[in-house]
Length: 467
Image (cartoon, rainbow, N blue to C red; front, side, top):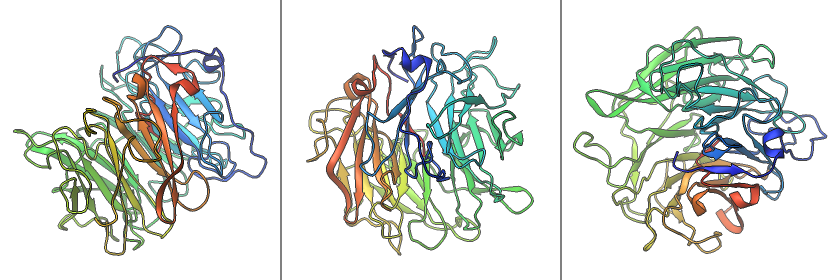
């Protein structure tokens, strides 16, 4: 992470600020941390300074409502917050990765937080994962996930996190990955005992990301791991599918990318895998497209067919705004969700390195719509901080699109877009645009900066959003 910040209010390091407690039965929705029926947005600020510990990290939770999110309904959580395991230490990067799900089946969503540079004993930067438990007052206490004894120094464990039901038993499971070590934690979890079981996923090489979703329509989510290997400059994409007795590994040998999301784009009952390959082609990686690209691999009863010709979209595709330029980073972050409520999952694609006029790396987000024939290149929209109705101004190194997330925060059946802007004013921010029947609307669009939540000095606020 590039920046640092300071928590100003003592309450932020001694306890958790929360929204108004829910009064009805908890919703059970993933991402609804206080059970009030509205999904919430959890955002990382991993380079926040806590006390005197630079880049110790924090998580900011913005609680959902019919009007969206607000800086007045929030929680700021660090490893110095009451009930949270560990201690805020320099360079921990607590909040660099996030995933939401109801791990203990109490109806309140929990949050898994990665601190990929956490040191344990005399092993520096090995990484750790922490569960923050949901409740009527939001995220309250926490518990550390079992720490593998085989982690190497600077291994970055927990760089990638996903939470979903991977074996179809009704319990939410968790996977953490980071370079040379990937682990599966199987639910149900308890607040005192942690996961039911945990084990190493030994078939993988070096990986720092994981994507989860149901590609086969059987109710069990697949775990997709992009990872780097010698001899394949674009990397490899592997996914694990539950066959009723074990997790079976399948390779997509022609797929490339390092980020991704899963959603049912063509509304056929099978999740589709969207991969972001944001790296420009170069001598050791001739694949891809200048400025970045995405590919869509359509799911089926046996998962994506490795022999299919995926949909490939970049900024030089007809109908897509802009043009592919070096270091745009198109595909750095992707998310899926039904923005207009038509039953087809849509896709948001970040290009945080996009130049806007003379503003270098100001950033943009492109939105493409699903249909019965797959992801469309008609009606595509692009948003920047110079788009009419979007707060702020496109400035050099804003990185609008450092992370993107499509989640229905307002409970109207339409996914809303959250955009991380981790370079905003050198400290970061989160922008919010509502979904509507005609697509995203800039009416009532919000820009929440670190000034509104008492963070400063380079927090990297908005560099990660829980999906």
